[in-house]
Length: 563
Image (cartoon, rainbow, N blue to C red; front, side, top):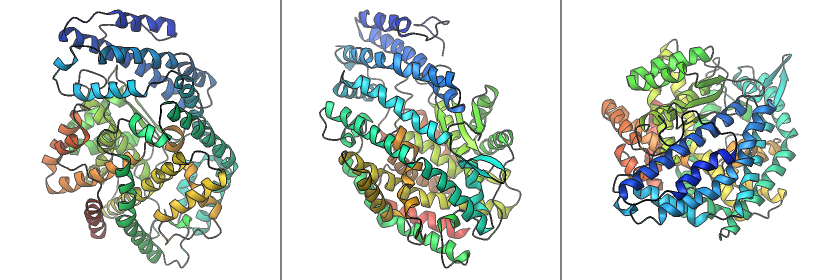
């Protein structure tokens, strides 16, 4: 993006220097719809510059959590810039909302944009600014705690992500030993994470009550701009998953238990290959992973491979796991330069390949909507963003032969990927239902929290897995989930998108060319249409009814049995 409103050499260092451009916008007179459109583009440019500056501070901090200078830089933004942004952005929003010419802008996307502005104004409270600043500071503590977690094994200090690779070992005693080491290390941080979560819950509840809501759940539903479905739809999703996805998941684990010839099927048995074959290793290092992903994507659509190639050239990839690096994986859009960043913790396993194509789907999405005029049009809701990534997991699976040496390995990889799909919906429902309980019962005790988690998790956990004697491990299993700490309620979107992704894959198997055309068309819309209309453009439905979930799970299981 070439700057027009802000000097090309301007860098964000202090609020006072940044405030000049906000003041200029607030004083600017708008005489007609043409001037309003230019005004909105200037706001978008300013927002893009700020967003990318914030993004780089976050990216650098997560790449090296031990670097105090990087952490201080990120916290400087959170403490000294972002609080000012909230108040002054609200003033800009009111100026836009009150503008007499806004109804004359009839281009696609403006109706949703203006609805979002009105929503932000309705939710803005001055007293929540310091609370949100404190929340953002606390939310980063999860990464600090998790990033420092490691175990000593075979004379080597390794991350828990790398330790998890031993849960695929054929030697059952090794799997069990590593499982207990991982759980022992997690137990060491149990109290710290419980205390952190309690602080977050209390602060979030205060934000909600300040805004006139009874609880944070209802506040957050509106704050996330969920205009196309209700809280009750989320509850329907939970019940539909319990009714039609959990039985398929248990059937899968009963099948594995039988194949492994185990009378007592334990948590350390859920990742090992059911045929007692060594873990699949689709790549050797980050460079190999990147090269193979580019080859894979080129077979789906040459444009997709060009996107990853561009990111590689611009050093927008940090893929390998290391001590001091934050856990997890993400794709971060960089709105000013237009080329996103992918962060992950690869250790050479199939799940890393899945993460790469998942985040690659997000990246392709960023490239596809880059042509849109405003940053708001380039900020699709998560239900759409995750459709891009989760669809790519399944569609790319048809071209994973570059990652595997023979047909048997490829078949195993596809089978394991579908096992992950079957596992996804129940876990998402578990996490989301848990959050509904947590935030509608904000004054709960730690004992009540543990009881509630256990009760909810047991609803969705396959009975085939025996946790006898491991109840404490099961009780704190929620503490693994980053989203609970850092991005509350941002998780059910994965469930809705997983349903959409299965439907996209089903469409792809029937007509590959048309499916990819629909995929690109839908993602190119950014957020200029409602979620149902974007899904419709993709040739699928935005649906989470029991009957829809039943049909999709039947399809997935039939494909699994073919392998």
